[in-house]
Image 1 (cartoon, rainbow, N blue to C red):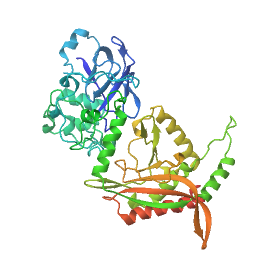
Image 2 (image 1 turned 90 degrees about the vertical axis):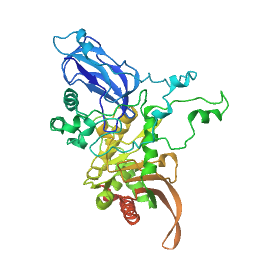
Image 3 (image 1 turned 30 degrees about the vertical axis):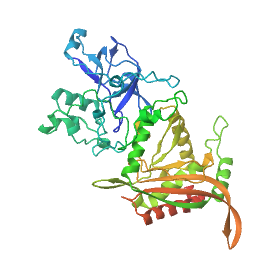
Image 4 (image 1 turned 120 degrees about the vertical axis):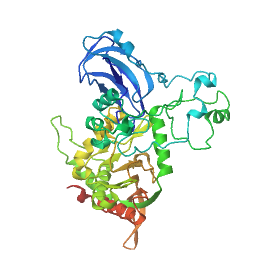
Length: 452
């Protein structure tokens, strides 16, 4: 019988995606493992592989369609010997609510009748935080499951949202579906008719968009619709501010020795066959390594808060904020405490380049044990950063600048870098946060300890 191809959940927190391109057309033969489409999420563009063999009988969602919900039918695959007449037995999605993504240079069309433009107010219930996936790896509005698990669940009428996953990161796999309790077959509550996917975390009492627009003179501004990345950033960080009780500790680090070591290491870096240095260290590379070692030295601070307990990480997986057009992303340096500065430098160069080209895989930017945000290159002296769940800390680093300090009772000039640690007070108390930042300061001010 025909097989429905669904919009995949490419990460545990994915709710919807843009169907950027079809790489197969109707009538094409498809083998398991063939790349059939490209999906754009808020962070990256990823390829979708077929999990069955057959013929692409019908494309339900056209290329260029934005905000396609996870688990929506996007195409139908015919098995061997079947023709298009068999597709009539397959239920098409009741409604494809997504519209083609607006081009940045286009101005929005005149506002149509309210009923045609947006769902009724009842379709937007009380705000729900989307910053952290619940236990079991389920993202809000989607379920993190393997393609085979989805197929088995569909064939047996099982609701995946009622199953606890046992795969990596809580992913639901085939054995979870096969061993599902009888209650898992209950149907999921239907969505309100015409309801649109959540557009972000909306605070109670917030002024509606049309009233805000009315405050400004017509023609005095350009309206730029939010893309999926901007909405996701707004949702996650608003929820983080509301849900996580954060406090901050700041220390000044003297980095003259670090700058001297950096200059000497770069000058003596080995050359490749092309005559270019195999690496070129930045101050941020030292910061990443120092913070990773500090987290290993203070293991009680290398944690993730769960309602049922805390995860204490055995390694320091450091997310590093990378600025993109219209947003940011935090690719992760895994096991940073074990890597040399040269390896960290080259890895960050590669991750940063692919991040800007939206080519990162979810495994390269999801998870991690903490993060670093460095605005020193913009001349920022100090700032506080918002914790990005599931982390319990984030380190905000400012610019190194020459300041007058007191040494041996006399004024002297030193290069000082301010670092501010944001901490989740549920998992890290003030003294523990200070201990972690002090360990970081010690490593930064003794750069030879980072060369191992």
